[in-house]
Each structure stands twice: as structure tokens, then as C-alpha cells.
Length: 283
Image (cartoon, rainbow, N blue to C red):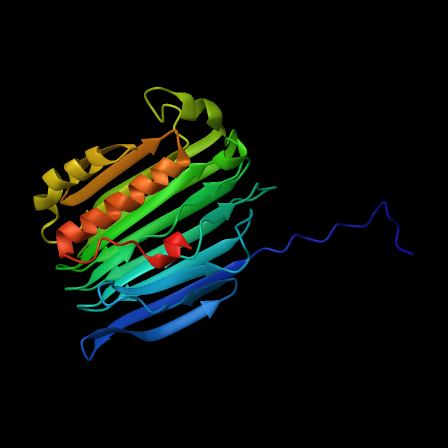
């Protein structure tokens, strides 16, 4: 029998999943040109009402993210395509024992295309460690609507994220030129950082909503009205032609509702598409 004093515990299994999707226009409709999936990530394409864009629904069959996981999503939206990418449910990031989870999203949008990156919220459990990168590459004439909501702890269970690590990086390039970048780092005593009045001011979550497109600057006054009309505290601004709305709120449910409402109202103002959110958000 092996000596129990010298036995080594087996390494924890880590996920290494990915999806790649390329979209093209055929017969006036957005179609799948290429699809690759590697567990635990998958994409479903539900039927949608005629007034809604085509939808790609991302699923993490593992049921959540743990330390050491590596997940990547790559989407290429061809010329004149119209698509919404969302997720089946909120993404849960569990407490990490060692290495952070790494999540990479790369999205390329061609001229004339309208692409929406609208996943449901990411919930960071106490002790979670997440390194996330979102890279958007836009050709001249391309349009993007993107939103991400992060919740610091499971508010429904009275949990606040006190310790852990978050590195959240965004980059938007137009024609290969970097036009907007944002980088948030939280670690150490996260509860204290969230409590600072000139920081998160005790918010339990944050939403970043952005629009990049040929006429983005003209919608700044309307974006400010939309932000002010929500129950969550929000504000809008313009940076290098990128329209930005940010929300903070001490109530997670209210934050989710405000983020969804603002995204759909902004979509409708810009494109005339239905302001009705994806059905999967309500399931």
C-alpha cells in the first residue's frame, strides 16, 4: 500500500473551453458561416420574433467558473450582419483556491454590421479571482452595443465580496486604432474599496454600457436622459466618439433592471429595433 504520508492529492480539474463564431449575410439574413465549440462552452441559436435581431446564446455547461479555468469567446460579425450575443444565465465565479480564472472575449465587427454583446450579469463570490479581457475590433462603419454587469457577492444570500481579485480590461479599436480602454483592478480588502464614498460608495455592483458607431456622438443627450431615468445611479459621457453609460447601485436587482432597460432603450433610439429584451433574460 502507498505511504499516506507521501501521497499527493490529485490536481483539480480546470476548464479550458472556447467558442468561435463567424457570421455572414446571405439572402438578406444573418447566417452562421463558421462555428467551433469546445466544452464547457456552447452556443445555441433560438428562434426569435421578427422584430428582434438574430441571437446567439452562450452557455457554460460547467455551471460556473472556478480558479484556473480558461474560457475564450471569439466572434466575427461580417458586413451588414445584425446579431445579439447574450448568455443563458448569470455567470457565477466561485471562490478560487489558487490561480485566477481567465476569461477572454474578442469580437470583430465589419462595416455596416450591428452587433450587440449583452450577456447577463457576472456574480463574483467572496474569494473569487477573475482576470477578464474584452477586446472589440471595429471596421469603419461598424456599430457595437456592449454591456457588462458585475455583482460583488451574492446579495440575495446576504454575501458581500470581501476578499479576492478582479482585473477587468476593456479595449475598443476602430480601424486598428485604440479609441477607448478601461482597466479596473480590485484586490486585497475589497469590502473597504467598495465602501469608499469617492469610489463605489457601497454599491453591490456596476454596469458598463457602451455604443460605438458612426453616429454615436449625436446620441449623447438622449443617453443622458436614459441614464437619468433609471432607478440605479447612472451617468453618460463621450470619449473619442465612444458613448458610455455607467451605473452603480447598492441593490443588485435594481441594477440589473436599470442596465437592461437602458440597453434596450438605447438600441431602439439608435436603430429602431424592438426595445424588448431577449427572451432568455426572463427565463
